[in-house]
Image: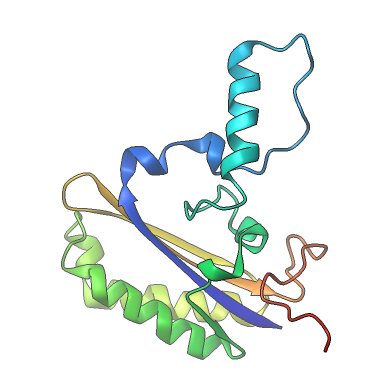
Length: 158
């Protein structure tokens, strides 16, 4: 098993567009309201390629490999990357509590523990203004939540 890292920074109102943060699922019935059809079409078009964080962390594995910010075999290495991501944005965190170094160290330690048993990690912080920062570490090959999802970075056999 290995772990992929993902990160996103953007406007909170963009992050709130849930229809493009979910896989399309089953097509709506012909009798469904127009709004349902519109949301479905938007999800079909946008979900596979948008860099917006998916609602479910494991669904990062359905995204293109170009969105992967790093890959690590060891949970500790993935945790170090997470710590760097938090440190890079900490001064901009809207909450003073979230900026505390001890809190960030505990978040990283907890993340490493979760990755060790095959779990995923997803963290989000409001930044000053109307900006949101999301960072995720996703177990791959296989993922406990969705073992059927293939690794997005899997190389084709030579």
